[in-house]
Length: 305
Image 1 (spheres, rainbow, N blue to C red):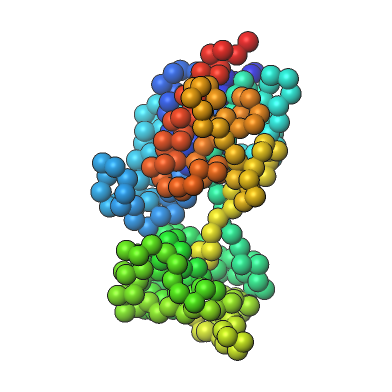
Image 2: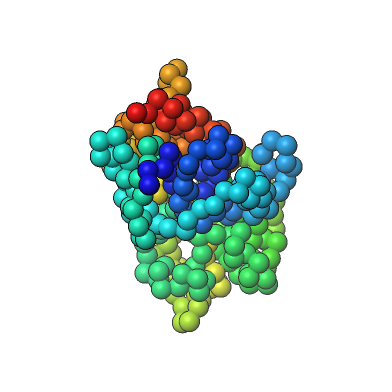
């Protein structure tokens, strides 16, 4: 079978593209390991139009409800490769091979790692990349958040509802997130900022017990129960060789020609959301990009012979 469209990813961009595709009643396939992507990790979403102050997981449920309304099904498969042979796009996953006239890559991003001893060993045993998922487990415990960008500030504030103490740590001397979040963090008595901190090792027995870091040439050890790593994200698009920028983000067209909007350098392969070189990484931006990409893909499919 040759599908009209394959959508890789089920975050805000992928789900939006799938809703548009379902409304057009084309033959399409959605591939993803999960639904919601980074949206489901967010503690509070306060800037999504029409929905005021909603936890990311609840907003994800609303997206899923709309998917269910259109009877959109997805296959839980990891994409291993994407290539184009002639006019056909070939997607290989961990379970099979699929062909289509067009593809939308909406695979989002994955957490950047510290790459220090103990990080992999204690994953799920005190080391986490998702405060929304694991903060409720930190009741009356001591937690550290590494990274003081917006995601780190957001994680610190969310953790403060559960943990008795939160250390916010960064390699830089001062907090780098947006002013309104920084102000909230500095006013929160449960949160202490430690700047100039270079993480060296995560220690423990069965679970995390402490964190070693270097500060101004001196080694220090911090006793704690958990570490939340918030030092940025990497585009999840290693499976494709389409043109990317120096950060590994897929480069897309911004064109006045409708069928070229959001297209990669390979005709018929489109991309949307955080895996692309669009600067703003926001849920509302991803949904808009998903809509643009699928409309361009539909135009391309209509002209496909």
